[in-house]
Image 1 (cartoon, rainbow, N blue to C red):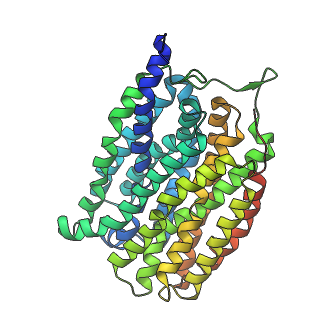
Image 2 (image 1 turned 135 degrees about the vertical axis):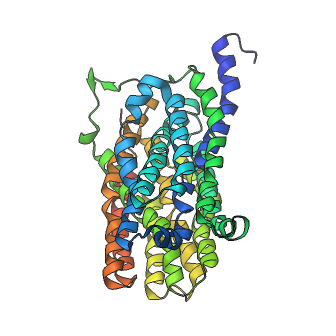
Image 3 (image 1 turned 180 degrees about the vertical axis):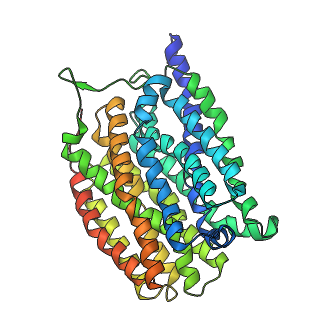
Length: 405
């Protein structure tokens, strides 16, 4: 069919660029964290960082995502989703470029926070971009950028140590700083998308306030919104403990830094095929509750295996945890499905992610403190296994066939 207006023609041209932009920015949503875990021991030694402070470092993502993520809908109403994601990508690239050369723990934490603030904006708004530009392909497009996210996470985890040891002569600062180049590569697409104001005929590029019966929708009164927030928070707790501490768990069990990095990479690499398949499947299901329970059971098995003996069957434990990590693309898909339009999804995404990340803040800190005081990973791992139970309950509630808006 031949397009007869400028708006449809623009939408046809912009949609492929939106796909490229989604993939490129999603690749950069985890390397700021996953590149750090494999060299955390070297960073701690260089900066004089205790295990408790390192636990705080692993909680910085949750703090940034909670505080900054909550501002994303407001910023998007002013500058559009593309403009805000472009701003976030700039902050991410700058933070990653400067962070490795920080002179102390305080400045290292601050620059990490800058990079993660940029990620927080994209985290909240990518489900909105999917709803705006691909309203007929929510599950598939969520799966696509989840695949890209896991590729970025696994690549950073797997190659940071070899890059540091081989290419950069053992300099961990260069091994971390190289990821700023990858972040900068995502910026041009979002600068172009920020200039577009006609993403589709079904949704505006600026997020309008959501009204129902003339009043602004109060998500705090919606049980589904709270279920999504709790589920998001508990899966984030597990994810950031694993991203921050799993390589150290394996290193403490006698494995080499390179092997520990590769094992950690598997947890993210499994998400490449699983995220796409899971999101596409979940997008077609009226209820996602059973999927949430199944994923949770894999997590329990993985943590119990690590608790028993990390070195006994490390590849099995990381496979189990890799499947458990699919709770992230699942909750993103549920967020997009629970809102009836892009504006509702924007508010729901901001609420679920900011509240969820706030709930997850204590987890990595508690794990660091427990490890510092006991000198063992058994109590922290037992705690993580127990937390999978309320996560599954929240997943059952969030996965019900309900919509808001």
